[in-house]
Image (cartoon, rainbow, N blue to C red; front, top):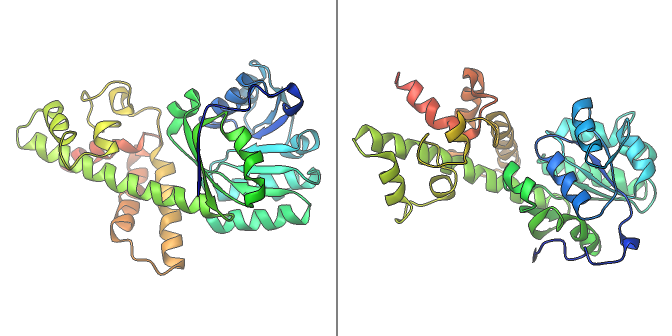
Length: 315
């Protein structure tokens, strides 16, 4: 495993290395990622299914085209950031997909969080066209994407890692090589399963403490200097009023949506089934987030599980 912690160390290179970079998928994560490439001097050729997303990036200096195939025609390094496995399959292999017009030798980096098996399928399809596919899902959320402080977990041909690293270090603080194609996705799925379990545990704990008469800020302070401390308690607390600058302080708007967490837990469930791995807490977390999606929490941040638990009690 290689770990690179950096801030675009290649930015001092001559502009010869700054050939255009394609970017497909300009959502909450993709747009700030593409903007960081622009800030680091890379011409960006981008597309998205939503015109307003294309216009936002065009206004910051990117060239906008109509389809992923058009991106592939103009760039030999392409990053994709898409919501799900079906979106990735469509963008790469669909009628207007990247692989319809991809040039031989093109480096394809997919930062979506999808099933590792789909990453492997896309790698095989890309190889047939003479291109190289790598999976590089991210951790850190919208805030880290904006600040260029994402963590990338990279799977693919080791010889191509340096080429991918050049671009990824412009968008992230940490770039970790995990192994063959699909291992980046495996690492991301494991991380998000633990994140969901930890968030539910934090929400339950905070709710119990409040019911027992403890001040939530005091309880959070105690947890964060004790053995129960975790990211969900000290960085992303789910209780409104405990922390500023987190979704719980803004009616659970922004952040990482409950729908996306449910999707990632579904990926964990599928891979656990395929590998005959027992994940009792992961399965329960999946069930809880699926119920939340059905109860009106789909577009709220996943930390809204605290509000969901309170609602279940009739509070």
